[in-house]
Image (tube, rainbow, N blue to C red; front, top):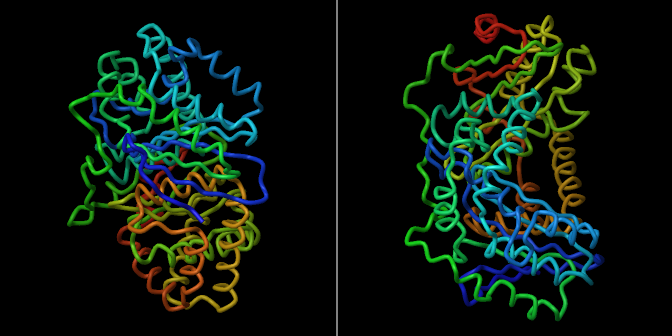
Length: 429
């Protein structure tokens, strides 16, 4: 069973002991991401994440950090989202002290050398270009810009080439000082936990952790909430196309969804699973298996604390886009108008349970789960508790949420490829 406590420097510690594993994950998550930025420094949260790996006073170069982790056979990485940034090391439990030492060293003792910051702008710009060149990855960014417009929630997490190249050493240092306060951090230790934990925590309550004395602190509620416009935008405003010469057209058809802590989020999970959650889902069968219209078709949702979206994504032949959208629209209409079957409901619940159980076998997945639960959920829950709530979803709940979400008057669409915007608008009327 997990345990939550405060360290003396205000870091929140969550321990998640797991049996049957010889691995330990040490994860630190900070509730600061790209939606906390302003336009001039767009991408700075992601940039700081990169700089954390460029050297500390104890480990002066990036190679000094990577070499010691590689030699230990560790799995390590970091990630930046719109709401949070995280750093983790998953390691043989016998070597866990290294994970505590290294992550704390990076977070509290990084050098932030101006020359390294300038040098790292190149790799970050190339990373942005890499995602830009991959339509499957880039489509999410294009879609969320359509949804949320020119505000932090609608910007690319990584920023733009212009903003990245324009970020100064002083701006980065000030942002880091304000965001990376110990009181902002949650430290999760998951996997094999033994009596070495108490001694290893010294790395997170040492003198280095007290260095940040910024007068400003970026806290998790310091963001501007997004509110859907009172009047529905025109269809022209709800459709965007990024022209790119591709053999496929990559398309998202989406709708305003649910915020992160909405009571219907469990029902939405079941609904999206039935509609496009696997190879036996309605959309996969109708779009791919019966008609061969696409290789990939799936449903998904993005859920932030103030807003959310539910959508269908497909990659298909531009010449068959019209037929594919007709099928997708028909399936949305059917799931709104007709109750799903008892078997579909039971299979969806079983699918969600099975996938979640398999995913949670990994201690790094458990660590991330509890970090997000603590930072963003109204109430912390284990995944087993969540599965119990999913099991209570009824047929009438699925239809009720389908009617709420899949309102064609609210449809949004984003595409990358050779399709023309005016043609896509006609197909959505």
